[in-house]
Image (spheres, rainbow over the protein chains, first blue to last red):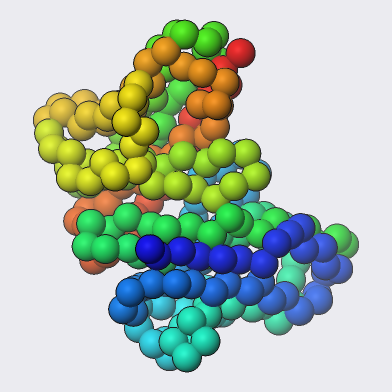
Length: 112
Length: 115
């Protein structure tokens, strides 16, 4: 079945450091891929997405490229801020009913 | 345009009681998805509903859990005879169409604690 695997956290960085959060997936075909962010006590917000191979999603300085060769969708940001501290979820769209399959989440802590 | 509204935000139930979680989708959205987030885990799909229809309930536990999305009013996730293992955050998402074609927006969740 379809699945998503993320690197384990927590990831602790200093402000302005480079961020990478790894995400790999197993799926039939080429599903759309997503990164969601969850701030403390809040619901999930869509951060970025990519719908086909080699697409690059980007938003708020974050980027991720859909790599079908490595079945990966790693999240990157060149310079993180304290306000980026949150839990990040990688997800794929499964089947034809629109349900999302999520990774287990990676907690990012950015220290000033 | 208000976002997806879930209530209550926090719910405490004793073992054996019933829990009712409500989700009001965004205006104009007729598709609702429920997900459960256990502590330290990602979200797991439970059920997908359109108005008055359950489309996909492949993630719903076979017993004690039910969901509805009536023609009028919010979607309801109902858990009967709650047990400690039901303690989790329950998130609802809504979309204008099937989420494969349009973006799904999430509510802030209901955090259920069973004591």
